[in-house]
Image 1 (cartoon, each protein chain N blue to C red):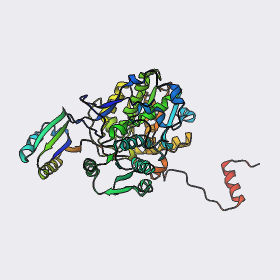
Image 2 (cartoon, rainbow over the protein chains, first blue to last red):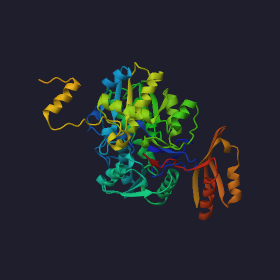
Image 3 (tube, rainbow over the protein chains, first blue to last red):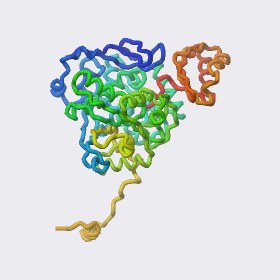
Image 4 (cartoon, rainbow over the protein chains, first blue to last red):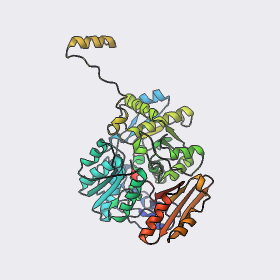
Length: 416
Length: 80
């Protein structure tokens, strides 16, 4: 099965179609372009058996990803664990809870490895030699690592005051890191101009329609790992809002292809209160997204004017979901809860997702007796500063058994 | 050159003729490609065409207007 079923790029606003090229906005109405497929071509060919016979990577669903033939970049990415969160179920008082754990996604421990694998594969197909991105964290590391492994030149643009740990997370891969002075808006605008001027594949600009499709693989995996079932409820963190829309698209595609039954899946969005333009629009019952200045420790979600906000809002409403937001304190509490109950150290975005889910369970927006999947998208080792003062400090003793015996006795631990 | 931007108008600016004023101040062709206006917010996709330095000055003028937020048409180029 090698024939591509990709039909075109289609404007999400006016419906104008374009042939497959590195373009991202409609020339008529400036609407964003999205990859559309001829699903009929897959009828009877794309089966559960075929998928299960393939290696456990995101590419076992390659027919539904916008590449030609085999992936050129990131061949081993994806296929992360979906775990039944029994301990967390008890704490939250819910019947069936799962965690899709992209905090261990190969190779850079975030779900960005999925979108970057598709973006860079497509960039190679288009003939680009240099790839680029503008990022404050996970995306920078993923582009740098995947480009290095594929032998591509890469440029990574970051705000000049980015924490050293994040600079290191991209720099180790030998990428060209450019720190830019100025406010977020200035940096954002410059990167848009750079993307337009240089002949590079800028992952979330001119190859964005392909890049965004990579998120669908997270949804496909969830359904396969649930035993070829769509979840009743799925909670996603929202930055640009893209993941939320692509999880929804993945479910609709599997239903269309007869791989799962329609389970009436509701999609829920999670944001930090310090940057919650999408959550606010859902709660206010409007579809207009008011841009905000981001102020939260959940930096990977700190996008004040989200490109897919309108579409995420629509998916949430149409699917019967909801959106919530949590304070930075609630984010930290939820990060600790996830770590202490399920042994998963998620980044701050994971705290946002769990914190919002908890809030929606308590308010009744998320029912306690139906299956819920939480999407955890990044690793806590990357945002250690958020919890550095929150974890238990070691109790220091001398190198003597007597001293430990005293401590053990105080803890009520019996010796043999 | 042609510059393509999204303009977000705060509630205070929704009813103000900002694009008309822009075309009066600068020798540029303004071409609205998409727009949605509601009581408390307006969104306009605008193409601005003219000499490079004049287009750049026009965009700077827009950025300097209180209650008008100028964004690249990609919106968030920077991601997490």
